[in-house]
Image 1 (cartoon, helix red, strand yellow):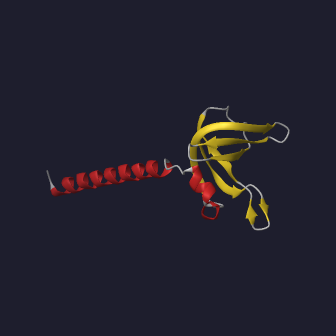
Image 2: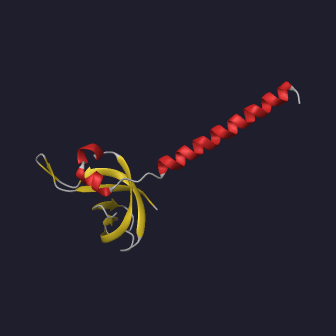
Image 3: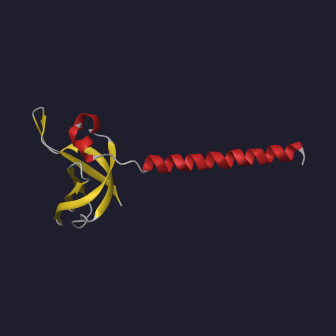
Length: 122
């Protein structure tokens, strides 16, 4: 083999390894889920941030007239209400939800609960 062929093969191998590493990092970063108790216990740290949670669906509400609803997700550490524009999943189903954290209600300086505004659900 000539030097040019060896260099070309080496470049292809390095490129392939870089592509594989980027794909692995993407999968790892996308699969991270947050504990609900961390979110609800530290609202100031998570307020306005995008999170991913996984757990089982509890109670749910749906208003067909407004096209809005909410459902509880429990991951074993705590539960949180998820606000959605889609019909909520049925009780007992395991879901993975991505969304933005916000206080449910604020009275003066006091937050009364935490919700996640759903952006994606699996």
